[in-house]
Structures are given as structure tokens and as C-alpha cells.
Image (cartoon, rainbow, N blue to C red; front, side, top):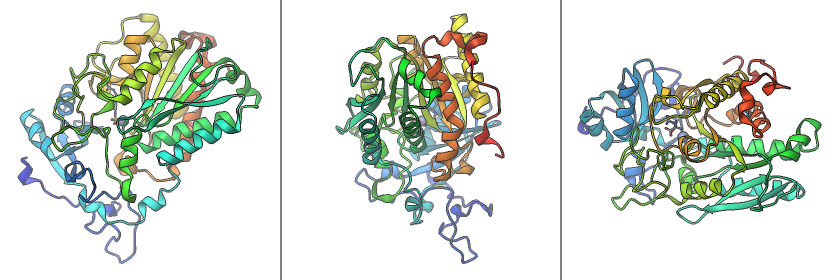
Length: 446
Ligand code: 0X9
Ligand code: ZN
């Protein structure tokens, strides 16, 4: 399919009222709530090219084809049998064709622009200023436990804030206690991941005196970074409208904006499942760690060899992923692999997600977890949070998803905090002391 032949498809499924030309109405005269977000008009200061996103359905019968699609610049969001669904700009259509990927449909997301109420409905989500405020207020409310510092600045100069929970070390002071870091929103539009990080921060601070948490908090060095990509997150909601933005806000000098921060880490950088074309959603940047956001995470982790576990929250698909992502080969250290699998499977029982090696989803290099494991030996996980599918809201699942996602993912977070002293304990019998195998409560009924 060539760009000129893009068909603007209005899906006729009645439940998908957002796909009608005026998404505020379903034809019955009654206003409906869009499941999918409003998109920005091209009036944004970043220019129209960034906003002209397509929802692409293509044939990709195996993982190799999925990786080729990523390399052509498609951000794959769902794998359904032999088809992939994802987001790209129009130019990527040609690259997909050149890569031998058969595109079945390319649906412009622009017709969904006009709904006015969705951002207001989502007011419970925190923008950058609000998220920073939450973090600072939590720290101020528990000065014996919590402190805040900046791990560095984003491209546009925003602080990338970390909340630290450690009663014996504040700010950037060193600590020998076993450390763990939670990160969120490498990808701008994955706002639910920031909510998960904030929810976890709030839970730990507000329940710090409870016996089940007090000992953990006393003995661990916990870092929570809710916004690795604050510039992108801010842009994505600019003007009270969603821009479906993935990358950071680097002007690439060719009218395109952004580097994919989860392709910019330095292990097997840009070798597979990433693109060197700045127009691509999976653009790996001009060099490994070229972006201040990934460079800040790198320095933050390199300066703290007490950090043993890392969890980076993304959305969506409900997956638990562990290295490697750049290759199908499993990690070579047998005891570590056993521990990774045990951790992923235990957490999957808690939240109902699917555990797998990252490359099972697709092979892609330059992500956070491959680098953190390869360079620093940190046990590193990517969670793809809710929803499971685009049809349940995709990147913009609405306010109810905040509470259900937090409820499903609190226990995995506490479990990882518990294991930070020795992650290899995961594969021994005492690892889940205090844990049980109840199915995830928050997922029941889905
Ligand atoms: O592609 C990504 O960066 C992550 N998915 S997302 O939809 N949030 O963009 C998944 C990264 C998993 N890592 C590898 N497969 N290497
Ligand atoms: Zn992501």
C-alpha cells in the first residue's frame, strides 16, 4: 500500500463509536465517550508531521517479520496471531512495503480529533508539574524516610526527579543497602505508567509505619522515577489534547521530533528492531546515550552499585518482560536465568500478566533492561501495563485503569523490593515467604 492510497477506514463496529467521523456522536444523537483519545490538530508548535499518525494493521507471521517492521519504523502495539497492529507516520508505510511487510490497513487517527471531553475526563492523571508536586509533597510529609533529587535534565531542561525512600541516606548520599529502582514513562504517551509509579510512591510513604512495610523500608534503598521523559509527556497532553507521542522532544533537524528512548541505550545499540531514520517511531538516535534522558539514567545507575533490581513500567499489553530483547538466545548464566524466570512467573501469578523473554514479543535492541543487565548486572524487567488491547483504551484507558492497574501491580513491586538483597533467592523455596499464589484480584472478570 502506498501513502497515496491510504484509506481512511471508519470501522463499523458499533462499540467503537470513536471511529465515526464525529466521534462525539454515534449516530443515535446521543453523545458517546470515546474509548480512544482525541488527537491533536496540526496546529501544534511541533508541526503536523508528528501528529499525522496512522493505526496500521499488517501481516507479520513470525518474529523476524515483526522485527523488520520495527526496523521500518513501526511501533508495534499488539501482536494478534499472524498480524501486528501499531502506530507510525505516513512515511513508514513505504518503508514497510520496502521491507516486504504487507500492510492490510492504515487508519488515520486524525478523525478522532474533535471530542472535547476526554482530557477533562482524564484529569485524575498527573501532568509533569502535578507529578513533581506529588513527589515533593510525599517527601515533605515523611522527612525521616523520603527525599527528592534530580537525576539530570531532559533535553528541554526539565528535572528528571527521583523519590528516594531510605531512612539513613538522603538525596544523592551513598548507601550500602540493597537498592531497587522503579521507572516510568520512557515513552511519552504511556501516562498510566507514571500513575503506577506515583501510586507505588504514595502507598509506600503513607503506609510506612505498617509492620509489613516498616522492615522493608528500613532495609532497602528505593528509588522511584515517575517521568524519564517529562518533555514528551508534557507535549503529549499539550493543549488538552493527546498527541499520541512516543519519543522524546529532540528536534532532529528534518522537521521530525524525537528519539525513541527505549532504543537509545548502549547495548547492541540500533542493531535490530530499531531504525536509524529520524522519522521512525523506533528511531534509535544518532549515538548510544545521545539523549540526556537515557544518559541521566545511565549515570544514575552507574553511580549506585547497590542497585540490584530495576523495573521499568511501560504500556500496554499486560506483559512481564526480561532480557534479552536483542536476541532470541536466553541469557547465558544459568542461575540468573532461573531466577529471572522464577521472578517473572511469580509476578505473573500476582498480576495476571504474561511472562516472557523480551525477544519473544519482538527482537529489539537498545532498551533499558538489556543495557542494565549487560552493563551492570541489574535484574531488570519491563512491565507492559494495562490494558491488554487497543480496544480497551490503548494508551489512554481512562481513569478507572489507574486504580485497577495499581491494585494488580502493587504485590509484584513489593515482591521485587523484598528480593533486592539477593534476587537469586527467587528460585529457591524461601523466595516467596509471605507471598502466595492467589490469582491477581484486580484482573478477575476481565
Ligand atoms: O518497544 C518497546 O520499547 C516496548 N514496548 S512499547 O509498546 N511500550 O513501546 C517493549 C520493549 C521490550 N524490549 C524488547 N523487545 N527488546
Ligand atoms: Zn513503552
